[in-house]
Amino acid sequence: MKGSIKIDREQCKGCGLCTAACPKKIIVFSDKLNKKGYYPASCDGQEAKEDSTAECTGCALCAIVCPDIAIEVYRE
Ligand code: SF4
Ligand code: SF4
Image (tube, rainbow, N blue to C red; front, side):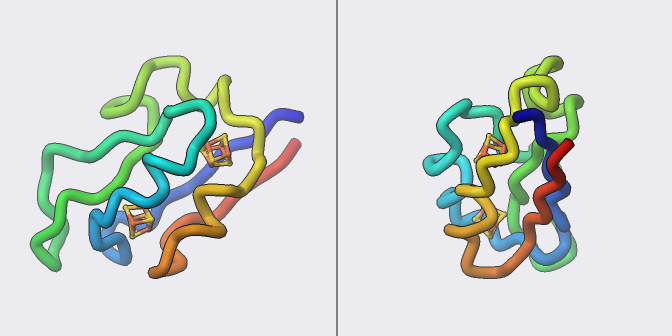
C-alpha cells in the first residue's frame, strides 16, 4: 500500500513519538521553529529524505501515537 502524510507544523509539539514510531523512519524534525516554539516533525520531502513520500506505506502508526493529532494519513 502506498501512503502519504501531512503534518500540521503549528499543531506539533516536537515530542518525537512519530519519528520513533515510523517503521520507515521517514519523519524528521524541521530546523525551523513553529509559532509555539517547537521544532516540528516534518515529512514533506524537503527536510525529510527526498524519497520520503514514496516510502510511506500509510500504516498510520505515526498518527496513532501523536498526542496532538497533528498528522493526517492518506492512502492510495
Ligand atoms: S503512515 Fe506509517 S510509513 Fe507513513 S509516515 Fe506514518 S508511520 Fe511512517
Ligand atoms: S507525535 Fe505529533 S506532536 Fe509529536 S513530534 Fe510527531 S507530529 Fe509532533
